[in-house]
Picture (spheres, rainbow, N blue to C red):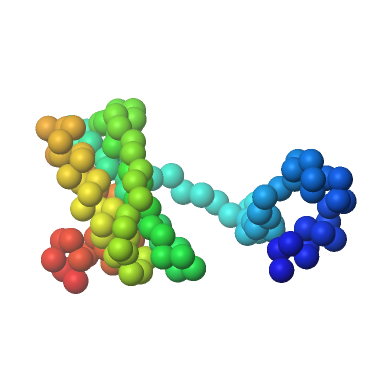
Length: 130
């Protein structure tokens, strides 16, 4: 199907030259320009803030985890992301992201760590209140 669309879109000369888009996913999602993005809350004095997020895509079952570790003054101490293998759903990706990134944060900081996540379900799984 893709080759048929390419044949309609590009001339034979362009296709032979090879100067064209390999794969076009179409337009991305429409974003609301009026939507207000809230910042992560600042850390408490004497505490580092670990902002964590996990993401899961059902179509190909890929998952990633990301983190930013901030000092008490809000400066970035460390940031990282990694691919997660064998995740079954979004909650599992969020929980893995929390566990992996909390372990990394504890290796880099001796101060207490305040964990921040957009998944209250994942946080409750780790805190034992689930």
